[in-house]
Amino acid sequence: EVQLVESGGGLVKPGGSLRLSCAASGFTFNSAWMHWVRQAPGKGLEWVGRITTKIDGETTEYAAPVKGRFTISRDDSKNTLYLQMSSLKTEDTAVYYCTTDGGGRSGEFAYWGQGILVTVSS
Amino acid sequence: DIQMTQSPSTLSASVGDRVTITCRASQSISSWLAWYQQKPGKAPKLLLHKASTLESGVPSRFSGSGSGTEFTLTISSLQPDDFATYYCQSYTSYNTFGQGTKLEIK
Image 1: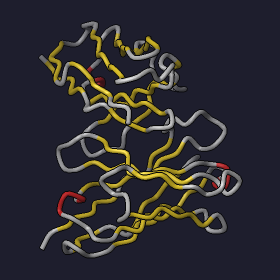
Image 2 (image 1 turned 180 degrees about the vertical axis):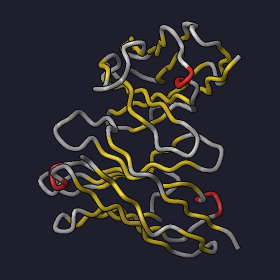
Image 3 (image 1 turned 60 degrees about the horizontal axis):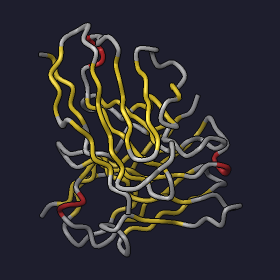
């Protein structure tokens, strides 16, 4: 069974930093492109960014609102995905989900974590 | 970047109704279109991918169609469990979600 478990969320002041983790199991993590998606309170889903596999160069892409402030990385030895968030703004307040197609599919987000809340407030 | 526009934003319907949600892409995405269902406090759930392929375990009352820039999600006979918010998503080089359609009980 595929499991994605996010951790590291919480309350942070504007301008601060936070690192989220996503522990993966039940699929071949090193073969899967991994993504972060967020959802502000009462709002829709917003793609944050993604990282490819080592074979594909571990390349990253980010949505415009987070580019230059957020960094996605992965540790295949620990089956863990990370989201390093810096220069946080109040508008970054959201539930953050890690998600993936699990590898071997076409990119649709078949598997999701339960989500973790990040609140940016003074 | 590709923009995805869903309509309507809110839809009121009754159990047993047939409902259709539309999603338009600002440029062609071939069939790289997915539909998700989300209930309050829960992660989204994949319903369909490649525009019309039903995800394993999803009831057959859900169906999808379209290609290029115009897509539809149809629920043939609404069940109580179907009242939720639905999102379309393009998953080409860009990963963009529509703004969502909230399906409410009439």
